[in-house]
Length: 102
Image 1 (cartoon, rainbow, N blue to C red):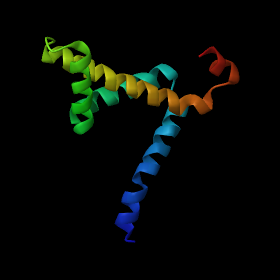
Image 2: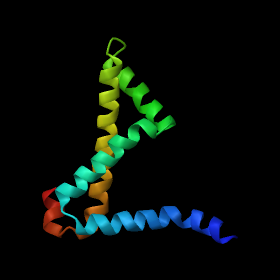
Image 3: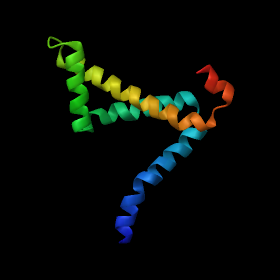
Image 4: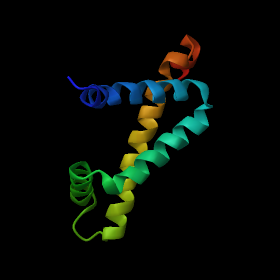
Protein backbone atom coordinates (compact mmCIF):
# COMPACT_ATOMS: atom_id res chain seq x y z
CA UNK A 1 0.00 0.00 0.00
CA UNK A 2 1.37 3.43 -0.92
CA UNK A 3 2.03 6.02 1.77
CA UNK A 4 -0.73 8.24 0.37
CA UNK A 5 -3.24 5.36 0.43
CA UNK A 6 -2.22 4.48 3.99
CA UNK A 7 -2.67 8.10 5.12
CA UNK A 8 -6.09 8.24 3.46
CA UNK A 9 -7.08 5.00 5.18
CA UNK A 10 -5.95 6.29 8.58
CA UNK A 11 -7.29 9.85 8.25
CA UNK A 12 -10.67 9.10 9.91
CA UNK A 13 -8.90 7.41 12.82
CA UNK A 14 -6.58 10.35 13.42
CA UNK A 15 -9.44 12.79 12.91
CA UNK A 16 -11.46 11.10 15.64
CA UNK A 17 -8.40 10.98 17.90
CA UNK A 18 -7.84 14.72 17.42
CA UNK A 19 -11.48 15.55 18.13
CA UNK A 20 -11.42 13.26 21.16
CA UNK A 21 -8.34 15.01 22.53
CA UNK A 22 -9.81 18.46 21.93
CA UNK A 23 -13.16 17.54 23.48
CA UNK A 24 -11.39 16.40 26.65
CA UNK A 25 -9.61 19.71 27.28
CA UNK A 26 -12.09 22.42 26.28
CA UNK A 27 -14.96 23.44 28.57
CA UNK A 28 -18.26 21.61 28.05
CA UNK A 29 -20.19 24.68 26.82
CA UNK A 30 -17.47 25.34 24.23
CA UNK A 31 -17.44 21.70 23.11
CA UNK A 32 -21.20 21.52 22.65
CA UNK A 33 -21.37 24.87 20.84
CA UNK A 34 -18.49 23.89 18.60
CA UNK A 35 -20.07 20.53 17.77
CA UNK A 36 -23.42 22.16 17.12
CA UNK A 37 -21.96 24.90 14.92
CA UNK A 38 -19.78 22.49 12.94
CA UNK A 39 -22.68 20.19 12.09
CA UNK A 40 -25.04 23.09 11.37
CA UNK A 41 -22.47 24.40 8.89
CA UNK A 42 -22.08 20.95 7.33
CA UNK A 43 -25.83 20.50 6.90
CA UNK A 44 -25.80 22.15 3.48
CA UNK A 45 -22.88 20.01 2.31
CA UNK A 46 -24.05 16.66 3.66
CA UNK A 47 -25.41 15.48 0.31
CA UNK A 48 -27.73 12.52 0.63
CA UNK A 49 -27.90 12.79 4.43
CA UNK A 50 -29.14 16.35 4.11
CA UNK A 51 -31.77 15.32 1.56
CA UNK A 52 -32.99 12.54 3.86
CA UNK A 53 -33.26 14.85 6.89
CA UNK A 54 -35.11 17.46 4.84
CA UNK A 55 -37.51 14.81 3.50
CA UNK A 56 -38.20 13.62 7.05
CA UNK A 57 -38.79 17.19 8.23
CA UNK A 58 -41.21 17.73 5.33
CA UNK A 59 -43.08 14.56 6.35
CA UNK A 60 -43.19 15.55 10.03
CA UNK A 61 -44.01 19.23 9.58
CA UNK A 62 -46.42 18.80 6.68
CA UNK A 63 -46.61 19.79 3.03
CA UNK A 64 -47.74 23.37 3.70
CA UNK A 65 -44.60 24.35 5.62
CA UNK A 66 -42.19 26.75 3.89
CA UNK A 67 -38.79 25.70 2.60
CA UNK A 68 -37.27 28.16 5.07
CA UNK A 69 -38.92 26.30 7.95
CA UNK A 70 -37.78 22.93 6.56
CA UNK A 71 -34.25 24.27 6.18
CA UNK A 72 -34.20 25.63 9.75
CA UNK A 73 -35.56 22.33 11.13
CA UNK A 74 -32.96 20.33 9.19
CA UNK A 75 -30.15 22.57 10.44
CA UNK A 76 -31.49 22.13 13.98
CA UNK A 77 -31.34 18.34 13.51
CA UNK A 78 -27.73 18.53 12.39
CA UNK A 79 -26.91 20.86 15.31
CA UNK A 80 -28.43 18.37 17.77
CA UNK A 81 -26.34 15.62 16.21
CA UNK A 82 -23.24 17.77 16.67
CA UNK A 83 -24.07 18.30 20.35
CA UNK A 84 -24.59 14.54 20.70
CA UNK A 85 -21.10 13.84 19.34
CA UNK A 86 -19.54 16.57 21.49
CA UNK A 87 -21.11 14.99 24.56
CA UNK A 88 -20.13 11.48 23.46
CA UNK A 89 -16.48 12.47 23.13
CA UNK A 90 -16.55 13.97 26.64
CA UNK A 91 -17.97 10.89 28.40
CA UNK A 92 -14.51 9.60 29.32
CA UNK A 93 -13.81 12.81 31.26
CA UNK A 94 -16.93 12.64 33.44
CA UNK A 95 -17.05 11.34 36.99
CA UNK A 96 -19.59 8.74 38.07
CA UNK A 97 -21.57 11.48 39.83
CA UNK A 98 -21.68 13.60 36.67
CA UNK A 99 -22.83 10.61 34.62
CA UNK A 100 -25.53 9.77 37.17
CA UNK A 101 -26.71 13.41 37.21
CA UNK A 102 -27.22 13.33 33.44
